[in-house]
Amino acid sequence: LYLCDYKIASRYLWFLSKVGELDAKKLLEFLPTLLELRKKKTHKNTEGTFANFWLLVGIPVENESEAIGLLFEWLNSSKVNVTGKSRSMQVLNILSYKYPEIKNELKLCLEFQKDKYSSNYQEKVRKMLAQL
Image (cartoon, rainbow, N blue to C red; front, side, top):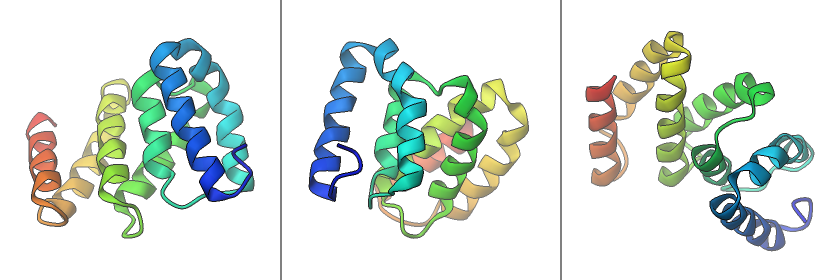
């Protein structure tokens, strides 16, 4: 279903979010496969969905390195919407406790964005910077 057109894929991803809310272990088990499918076909505005999955259930250990790279890419991209950026920032903050070496890069990215986008997003960035 993920490889279908955007309308079907987006509803499928929405459904998977609900699965994750009900059974985090089941979604976590499936995330490596979904990440591989993403390499075959990337749909617009799915960055926030993947970041949301990782917020809900965590990142499979075997995908952490790739996920960190994607999350920084999404956080810094001008093509990713504010929801995707916000969720990416949250997941990176969680990961920074496990991998403290990413804190400086996260701080730099957030400093660059603290006066951009909506006032709500700016407030989230300021709070995150205060935590870091």
